[in-house]
Image (cartoon, one colour):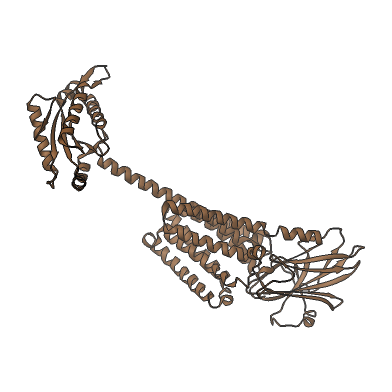
Length: 565
């Protein structure tokens, strides 16, 4: 199983880890020769300004490296210049729109329009400044320019980021520019919507279980929603809020895996059941928490080792989940499945953010996809655990019921009566109500067993138990004390108890039990009765008096009711 899993990861790694950049210094041309312009992929080149202050005239003379229009360069390319050479081969003038769809996470983005080395137009967008921004729609920076027939221009784009450098440039005519802006956030909205649905589902799970792991899972989802919204520009697209305004919320990059590890500790009870795995989780959790608090004071530097720490966290948590699976923890295989999806897609995202792999929808959105998939599995684990706990609780309740009831008649047994009689006596004394004890014994029951067999004897006992249940009020207790002897604790005075006892005796006398041979078996019952005194602290005295009354009933010829006093 693990061998195939490693092969699967290797295949994905080999497929996705294709270098996105080639070292050619000659800038490629983008030819415009069609009626519609809808270019989301085109050749360009880039240059990393390590000084971060190089003037534009000097930038124009630098050797640029060829690349695609979607690029990711990691954390060592804070200031990056893109160069696009555009040639209008059509016979008419064209108005084109250059989009930077990932501008929402940048500190600055600048556009320079040149022709033959001369600067024609320049637009500077400072996204680290609070307030409205020109040339920004949602999270996309837009630069428009005109190209006459057979005209060639060079557009430079300067991108300054806070941490990781990645962006995608697209080239459109006016109609396709509008369409791209309208549909730019649908994919991310779907991811966030799914996570909000998981939040609602988790809320109902918490109402039914009241477990702390539900609270930890909620914070995991909240951190995930914030991180996905920031990473993919949802705040910019819907509310016009950019990364500079919400920069501190990037601390969720450390809080989200911290809550994931806490979830593992709680759901697997690692502290008490798996001490070695618990230590490993505690170590990585300590590192993440330390980085989180560091990010509150210096976020930019705190985020630099984020990709490395993410890889370390995923390695530790995957190893722990495999270890727990091998130890046959019932939840481990489900967590391993969800966490594997999280790791695979986050691995692709880490490689993308570090500039190792090419940009595509899976790589660039790997974090969001991984969070949603793992969130789904975590919700399943929570519901599975709740069902398991409910089954255990139900089994415990059933065991308790079996311990307190007679298996043949389903009446309470002597154990239950001894356990609850004192409580009932206290309640009666507090409420000022009266109690009475009835002790009943089947007459000549041994003769029935000897004549018809024990199976028929059991049927007689069940029939008499049904009679007791028939005359039992809501708060009364009917018990089989053993053999053919029964006890009924009535919430009434001696007079009413005597009437109930007579009804029981009469119904027993009229009762007929039929054997398999269709023979009729009749039986009678002798009953002793004793009211319970409010001054007594021990109900056993009343039972003893009722037993003496039962003995008198037997002496008087059976099939009768005798009150002790």
